[in-house]
Length: 168
Image (cartoon, rainbow, N blue to C red; front, side):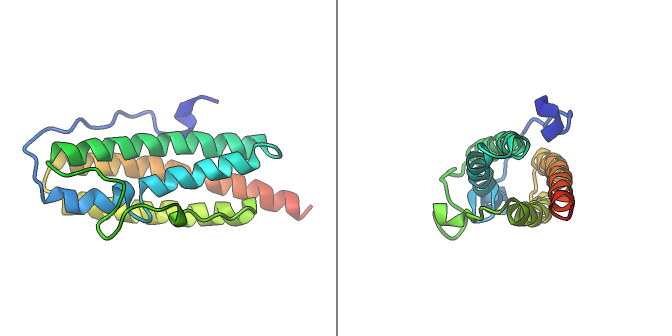
């Protein structure tokens, strides 16, 4: 499968000024807060590792979604730096921690959790898009939302298949 299955085949907007340092506060938690992109990357990589020996399809999906989330994290970190912020691995209230990852091992349970996480990310990114003054940053946040919607669909498809197999 190509990477386009895990991300829309649409470009990400290029950030252009003017830049507003206050915009950093609007996106820092999406970047690497407790429920931000960094947590998503680590969550999905963990799930990739633990499913590699028994479910190749889930393992591959988790890895590919993690790669898309890494791109989101990188774009937000670069945006924070361009706006004069410090792209540390932490949100507005604390540094990032591995304790942010939910170490659920059951694929049905972790896919349900992932769907909830992605829906929360959609709400958070949409809120950030409305908060920022820079229009290209707002466009970037909304473009990222489109990928998160793809991830919800992927996780729902995998979940539906697992549930169907478990009831047979």
